[in-house]
Image 1 (tube, rainbow, N blue to C red):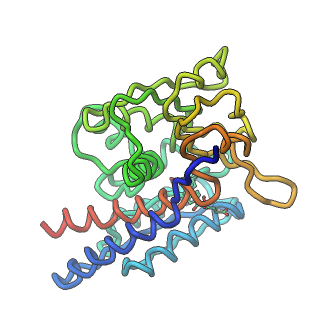
Image 2 (cartoon, rainbow, N blue to C red):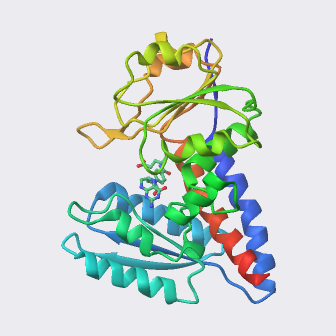
Length: 284
Ligand SMILES: Nc1nc2c(c(=O)[nH]1)N[C@@H](CN(C=O)c1ccc(C(=O)N[C@@H](CCC(=O)O)C(=O)O)cc1)CN2
């Protein structure tokens, strides 16, 4: 058996085309949504992700505001840029590209953002709203994972989901989304302290691997027919992405979100969606 592909590239393209129509409608009302990005340092992967976000903006008609600081930037210098974007009326929403360089207090930077302009859904106020069940911009990768499953007809309600990883952008927020009444999944969160990862994974209808450990998810851990989404990013010596999911998993699983080409493009599409939603909210 070979798994069907959860095609993030094609799904993101469809979402972007829907968003382009909504942006046109906003522009007809005199509103142009604008996405800001703050990039600190010269991490090649981060530069690539940010460039991709601005390419997407151009495709759907969202204007771009790019702020770049050197890796030597101080906490104060980064916070000044955050204050500037908070005050910029042309900036509907923005993100601070993570990770920030060592020595920078990331939480302090995120907390300084205007929650109404938080396009990543990672501001503590917005994460708190998510916990409370109040409307908030949703974290992009978790939201992209759910949208990818939904648009491929993979049943989430009642599913046993195992999330591997507890990072701020995926592992921590994803269970919050999956256990909402609208999703109704049962979630187990695994991490480096999990005693028997294989035993947890064998029960799962859906596996989300976001640990950043190459080929951590082995074929013998996967229930036949399960949906397995690879979100982990490690790189080999040539810079090529190596995911968390062993290639042999495709012979056991029913669905696989490859990496690249699965969840990554969905993360970018959900970011645009948050910006458009914020602009629509502002426009009334
Ligand atoms: N402020 C944030 N920082 C980071 C986030 C985030 O959601 N907000 N997530 C990741 C990086 N990320 C978005 O910023 C991201 C990662 C991957 C992709 C993507 O499209 N990947 C492609 C492959 C690209 C390649 O070849 O390198 C794919 O999967 O097909 C988009 C965005 C950490 N930081």
